[in-house]
Amino acid sequence: MVIILRHVRVFNGVNECDIYLIGTAHVSKDSIEEVEKIISSVSPEGIAVELDDRRFFSLITNEEKKVDLKKVLKEGNFLKFFIYLILANSQKKIGESFGIKPGSEMKKAIEIASKYGLPIYLIDRDIDITLSRLMDRMTFKEKMKIFWELLNSDEEDLELDDDLLNDMVKNPEKFIKLLKEISPTIYEVLVDERDRFMAKRLFELSKNKNSLVAVVGAGHVEGIVRYLKKLENGNDIDLMELIKVKKRKKSLKKLLTYGISLTIISIFLYMICYALNNPELLKMITFQWILFTGGLSALGVLLARGKLITALVAFLSAPITTLVPLPLAAVGTIAGLVELKYREITDKDLVGIINAESIKELLNNNLFRVLLVATLSNLGASIGVFYCLGKFIGFLG
Image 1: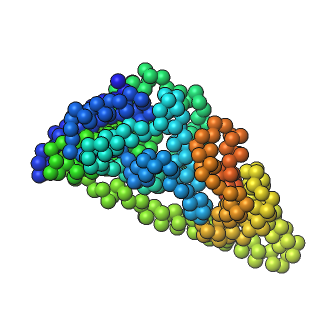
Image 2: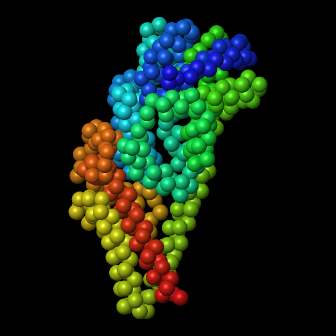
Image 3: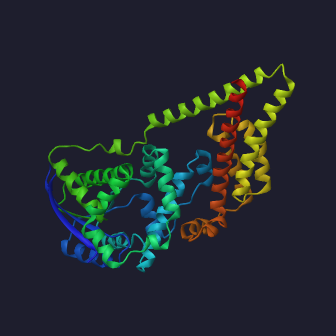
C-alpha cells in the first residue's frame, strides 16, 4: 500500500478536532484507491488538499494557467521559470511510468468532497511564492547546481519501481534527511516552510469541527504533525511571514546591480576621458566595447538558434544596454521580446517543453528558444563587458 495514515487529535483553543493526515505518493495508482477508502470510513466534516489556487484550477480543468512570457522576460525570471517546468516534467514522467497522472489522488479527494457535499480546503502555499522564496534564498552556486542536475536528468534517473516508491512513502524521513543534506535551502523552503504553512491552515480550519481529512504528500506528514502539536502548545506560526517575498533582499540585489553598473560606467567613462587626447586609443576602446559586448551578445543569440534580426538587435543594443542598470533595458529582455515577435508561442510549446525528452526537442521548441535567446544574449554581453574591463584596467596599469 503506497500510502500512510496519521491520526492526530488537536485542541485548537475552541474545541478538539480529529485530523486524519493521508500521506500519498503523488504518482501512485494505489494512492487514489486508498484515499477514497479512508475518506469514506472517516466521514470528515471537510477535506483539505495539498494544493494552491493555481494547481487546483489546473487539476479540475486539465488546463494550465496561461504563461505571460513577456512578464517572464521583463522580470528576468528565466531560472525560476525553467525550474518550475523541469520539476513538473519530472513528476509527469514518473507518473507515466506507473500509468497515472500526477495529482490524481488530490483530484479523487476533490471528487469525493463534491460527491458527499463536503467543503474542500486548499491548504498549500502559492507555488509562485514558494519558488520566489527559493530563488531568494539559494546562492548562485546552488541555483546553477540544481538547474544543471535537473536539466541533465534522463529517463533512467526518473525510473522508480514499486518497492522504491513504497519505501519512499513508508520511510519518508530517510529521503527528507537526504534532501536536507544535499541542499538545506531546498529542504527549508520546499518542505519545512510548507509543513508549517499547511499545519497552521489545518489548525485554523479545525475550529468548530469534529474531524478533518487532509491529503498531502507523504514527505509532509511528520512535519505537519510536529507543527500541529507545537501550535496546540501555544507556539504560533506567522502565515504572513511565510508568504513574504523578502523585499530587503530584492533591494540589496538591486543596489548591488546598480553598484556594478555604476562601476562599469565609471571605468568606461574614465577610459574615454583618459583617451581624449589620443584619438587612436579612443577609437580602439570604442571599437572593442562595441565588438565584444555587441558581438558576444549576438553570438549568444545565434548559439540559441535565434533569428538573424534578433542577433542584429542584440549587437546594436548591447553596447548601450550594458551601461544601463535597468532590467527592462537589459539586452536579454530586448532580444527575447524581438525573438518573441517572430515566434508564435502556443499551448503546444508549453506542453512540449514539459514533455521534451532530449536537448534536440527543446531546441525545436519556440518557447524554449525564446528563453534561451534571452539568457545567452545576456550572458554574451556580460562576458564582453568583463573582458573589456580587464583590457581597460590593463591599459591604466
